[in-house]
Image 1 (cartoon, rainbow, N blue to C red):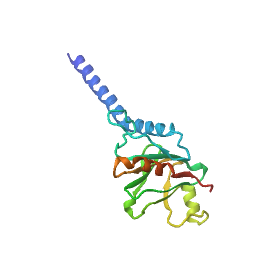
Image 2: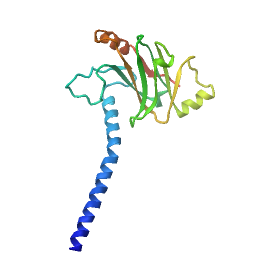
Image 3: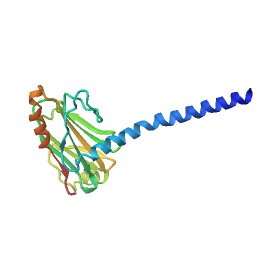
Image 4: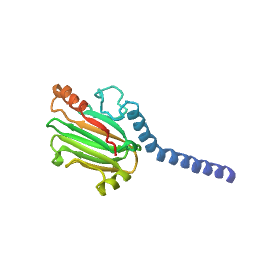
Length: 182
């Protein structure tokens, strides 16, 4: 009887430990899945406009169907990343993510930026050169520092009406996303 109780207790403890490990590892696996999906879009050094999320269809990136999206991927080993564009007079936001899917920086046009998106993404060595004034940057450039060299940028626009969506997606397609040689 005692032996059976010990086996049951050991089974419960082992099951709990396995359950805990699986639950704690899921967020890191999901973030890598997002990186893999963005990597599969051929978005290195260029903005790619994402197809709209349709109701009832698979939505692996969990996109809001009311927003228009563009993503681009940058390798900061090739030089500082620059994201530039003129966006419509409507709500928009931009976020920089690392490979793990963690937001490094995020802002909206409601922060007084207006229509012009001017974002510079630097790794730690490039930030050091910037602080020593060995890199030239345009005035008004939003500067983001990344501890990692692999990042991706997501730009979101909110069309006031669905009839405006194509025009907003065209504006997203004109975003320049590339590396500047250091």
